[in-house]
Image 1 (cartoon, one colour):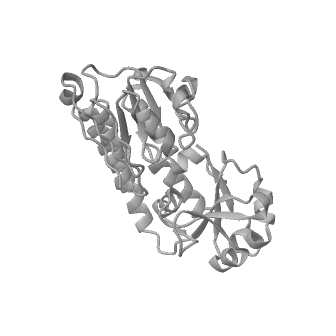
Image 2 (tube, rainbow, N blue to C red):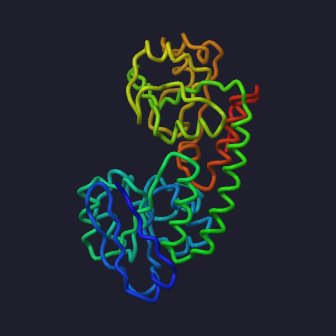
Image 3 (cartoon, rainbow, N blue to C red):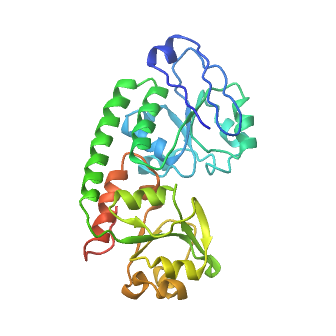
Length: 298
């Protein structure tokens, strides 16, 4: 269960309303201040992209380690990984608002941060185009920029609709196996209800792994039976394995993707961030899936 308070600019600036963001960990945020927040810590790479797209980046004072785009965001102090935050690190920069993507934590850290007397706004996440549009709107409202947020949401929505229309027109869809890691020879793959499955569908492909949700270690037999046509992986992921090592894995080598040498690495935030660039990521992935061009870049 998750929720986000939908604030308009008048509510945020002119009144000291209570911002309550309830997530599955059960913590609540505290009352907002009357003045407009201008010392914001943003937690979540897609939210950072939206803030910059809205032209509100001057209000940011720090970001989490997944906030790597645009390049200018990297110059902000890094308060840690979105799911392994230290309350001390987040609060040390003296923020007057924390804008966080759903699922930030760990829960203990989220609880401490929520009790520090600073407004915390949690923006819901999801695995489809509509979740990106709603995330954009919610971020605009949280910043008191509803009109700009709506305009950006409409633009992003139009781009996503165009990508969905293109994907729907593909008759013979290729099966894609998203590999998060092959460390130690163990294959960690994406099932349903993941950003990976969502971007594959938006690009016109089909997720090769079925029968489970989230990211899970899968057997060699399951991968061979899935018979993926393409292997997708993060170029900037934590797995240091090369494409050659992926293709040399016994299970991968036995698949159509392995035999054809079809493996593509793309930037993790670009394909899994689910922000303003997602439609572009889907187009580039689709180009690789259905043409003989080299692996896409961004």
